Length: 287
Image 1 (tube, helix red, strand yellow):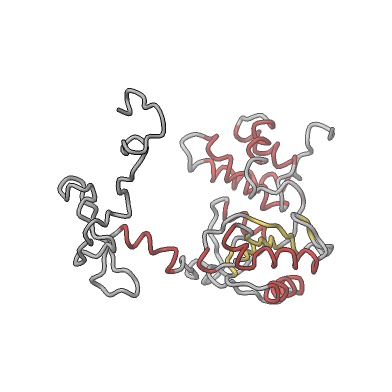
Image 2 (cartoon, helix red, strand yellow; image 1 turned 90 degrees about the horizontal axis):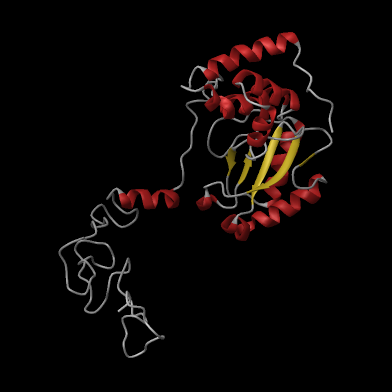
C-alpha cells in the first residue's frame, strides 16, 4: 500500500490550481458536479490522475478520496499512470477493424515496440486501441489527443508517429490543430483554447454519418434530387394491410406494389397468428 496521505502540490502549483478549480466549481449549482472537469484539470497538470490530484479534488469538493478514485478509475479518458505527450488511439471497433484498424494497431505495436496502453521510451507516444470514434465513414480512423486522422493505413500511421516523435508539425484531417495531451486535458476541464485560429478550425461528420439525421428532418437525400424525401409515416389512415400507406422507397410519388408491406414494421406471420402452423399451446393472452 502507498504511504498515506498523498503528498500535496507545491504551494505555487496548489494556489494556481485552486484558482482554476474555483472557476470550474462556480459553474455548477452543486460543487460535487464539478468532479469530472476537476479530474481533467489535475490531469492537465501531471499528464495523468495522481494520488495528489485525487486528494486535491476530494478536499475541494468535500468528498472522500475513495469517492474520487471510484470516478477516476471508471472513465477511460482519465489516465492512471504517466503517459506520453500524444495519445495515439487506433479504432478497433467492427467497421474500422475490418477496414484495416486491426492491421494498423498490430503494426504500430511492433513498430513502436510497445503494447496497448504503453508509452515509447522517449515519452512522446502512448499507443492504445479504442472503441468507436463515431467516424465510420472515414474508417479506419486513428485519433491523436482526440483529433481525427481519417482513412489511415499502416504506412500512413507509421509516418504519423514518426512525425510526432520527431517534433514535426502534424495536422489532423479534421478539427483543431494538434496540441499536447496536457493541453487537451485543460480544454476538457472547460478552459478555452486560446491558440489563434484553433476555435475556427472544425470538421463535421461525413455524409454517411449524417444521412439518418437528414432523413429524419425530411431533407433531400444526397444524390437522389431535391424532391426525394422520406414521407412521414402514417399512424391512423391507410390500407387495411397495416402498412400505413407508406411507399417502400420512402418517396411520396412512389406507389407500393400490391401485397408489398412496409419494410419498417410490417406484420409478420407468427405461431400466434398462423393457425395452420401452431408452435404449441397458446396462453390465454395470446389467443
